[in-house]
Image (cartoon, rainbow over all chains, first blue to last red; front, side, top):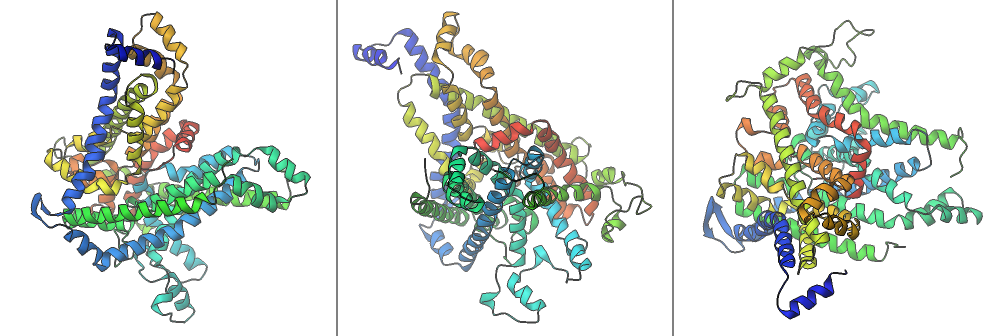
Length: 328
Length: 290
């Protein structure tokens, strides 16, 4: 920066030129709207949230209760249940999304014809309003006249309850074979798996777009050199594409995990957390406590617990990725 | 990679891609078809009731019927759907314009002006990204009550007129514009604001468009916040209206629900097909949904 030395010398001499004063005034005035809005709607709410979470809150802090809300949240089964649902949701949907995304992106990268058409179409679910597409999918999943059950009936399989089925998917499969599975082997509920299918449908196009950008950054010479050494398609993919793509994969991993932890809109539209809490993620639980039960203090405490979990996960991912991500 | 055009490998690739494309498209096609079916065809799961397989005509009447079912604006007497739509347009437009103003100004100050403490401020601004939306949800709702903004447009718009990602993106772009350009403009007697408006912003069209499109996608999709801070049907945005219709107000009329969904999805689709390259670039440059 060429301007810095002159400024320093002027400051030493004790006064600013009129032009400099005007620049300073203008600069801070330009920053003011953004900074004030950020302070009011991002920074202050964190502190205010801490305060609310220590209160029995009915329009105002009617009673200071200390860490009571936190203790109650941590000793309530529904909290742990919601974290378990959230974790299950993330554990299945993150690898599924990233796996399909990477696979399809790699196929598209093979200079296929109509690449632009495929990219446009695959990106479509991501761009459209979540509430609208969740409404469409609810209809596809409808037990009475949904198209999925129509297909199942046509090929001679029993119709399913999809979004209203609290039973585990493994239990359902075993049941149709006439076997009763113990509760621990029942697997995630069909309702949750149906939500995961929807999430995958929405986000795969996004993952493809990001992966394609990452693939474009890998120099072609590397592939050519490896081919001279006689490497085949799978070896190329494993020893060049995967490691060189790892920064992209890491970026997507972090954002997908955070994304699954805040998943709300489609869950609320499709199941409202039901059936029997089978799809009540922590985000949904917070919303229920706030919107339906008006328990502000408790909901605030729950959100900080979720915040802590997300922070912890991000730290773990950082540690884990530090050893694996290859930066050129 | 060397694969001849009609090898089995090539065919398999196209097979997978075509299946993927169909899976992406079919739910929308199904939505559109259902929007034109009669109630009976929906209940009987009749996939194509029109010629040559059936004798029915497309039910254009579903559209006015859906409007009737959604209800009417008590203030103006017009269909509520129109109100929802206008609310979404007004809120989204205000958010996009507001965000552009706050972030263009802040980004320029951070990129070009010599201000003590600005790098520290920039780091502080970026740290805000780390805070998940849920962590500030409860206090923000309480603040809306305290400010008497509950159930007003202020609550829908003002908290979203600042965006850290937008500031970051524009700052990066502004920094690439050579300094000499400003010196030349200064010779012509331009101040910072005129220079920003008449030279920097036009030069940064791709970045400005990216910020505008991202904020458009995010706020057109907004649902949770409007549901929390509005009570009157008059103030609903499309997402809230659609969800309320689905969860009870629309009874069991799936074909009308699909009419509603079609009308919500259509404007975004049109915009997407007109600006698809910019949309994709916008999302790949930043790419966080919501």
